Structure formats: C-alpha cells, structure tokens
Image (cartoon, rainbow, N blue to C red):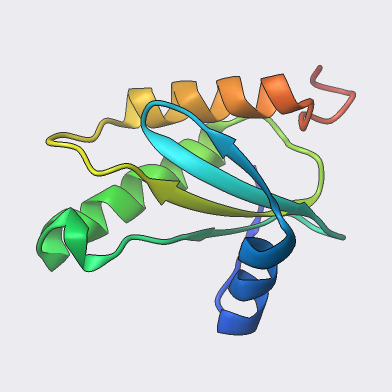
Length: 109
C-alpha cells in the first residue's frame, strides 16, 4: 500500500487531539480522515534502547504497508510495551482494528 509519512509535530498533534482511537492487544491506533493516507509511529524511550525502538518502528511500518488499502486517513500507531514484538501480531491487529472500524475501501471490503 502506498502512503506518506506524517513528520511534522503539528500534523501528529492534530491527529492526537481530534482523532478516533482504536485499541488492540499489541497497539493503539489514532486515525483522522484526510485527503490521502499518511502514517506515523510513536515509540518513546520506555520501549528500550534505540535498537529496540527502531525495530518496533520498522515492524509497524511494514505491517501497515502490508494491510489492505484503507480509506484515506492520517494514522498514528502507538505500540504497547511488551517483551517481544512480532510482525504477524502487528499485522493481525491492524487488520482487525481497521475491519472493525470499516476503514477498508469498498473495493477491498
């Protein structure tokens, strides 16, 4: 799936302030409808050293990329603190949350 990255603090703050939250066992997603699909990952220092944080970010970006095409919206992904993180768990939970919320485009539904 093609998406752009949310990089500006102002855009991320807007999603956090007025976006809708979705929860799962491995992560929290906050989304806000927009003109195009955009995504950001928020991983703080409580997740471990930089090597672990970067791995979590890579896994989340790849899991988001592998989900079906979702309706245009800005998405902020916040993982839950855990001992281990897996691509399969992130992908499964993203698909469940987006399906439950009805965010997949009509073509893929």
